[in-house]
Length: 283
Image 1 (cartoon, rainbow, N blue to C red):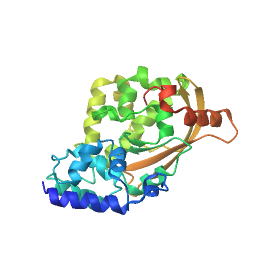
Image 2 (cartoon, one colour):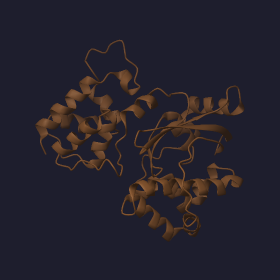
Image 3 (cartoon, one colour):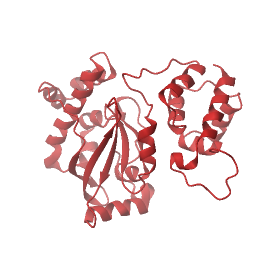
Image 4 (tube, rainbow, N blue to C red):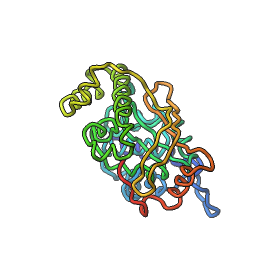
């Protein structure tokens, strides 16, 4: 691990960012160029002390999970992300099979979507980042690890929890859509990839998935009109729109409701009350 190189790089990237670049409000008393250390730490969901030690050349070797969080917080390009991994003694992530890295362009759009639920997903249906409105609607899933990070995986392994968000008469359609989406990712990533591992695990754990997998459904269906059931607010009709990265490895999913409707009022209520008071179920 090259602590000098890492520290210099972190300071440079932090000073190069402005609050508006990451969705923060510029205060009148801001005197320093770029973002503060505590702001980067907050964006990366790590302690300010931990981040400060990295910049002061006295921190431990960051884990790959910490580096992925820093790459998101600092809005690093793929080349910058790879450089940071290497100077900390890690191999750069494989850009083909996917990782926790998030395209800066998607993050910039997400930063500006404050009034409607929006989240960035991987090709395997993993929630990589959510805005506050999406957390209020779906619940905070940042604590999940492994295959459980994937909504596709949870749909078939935790049906009692996951399917409560959808009307019962829509469950079959959603099951087919989940399998078709995973089949599309499997075709790109291959049998030996993480997609292949997930398929094999789901076939072992879910008879429903195994049967649907044999139908060879393939599609990436994100543009949709559907009803979500919130535990406190009840049914909310939303339109889903998707913005993909060029390689289609990640997608920004935005959920909106028609103006002046009951659903629009419920989304406004979510934004006002937030996640703590509504105590929503997990996504």
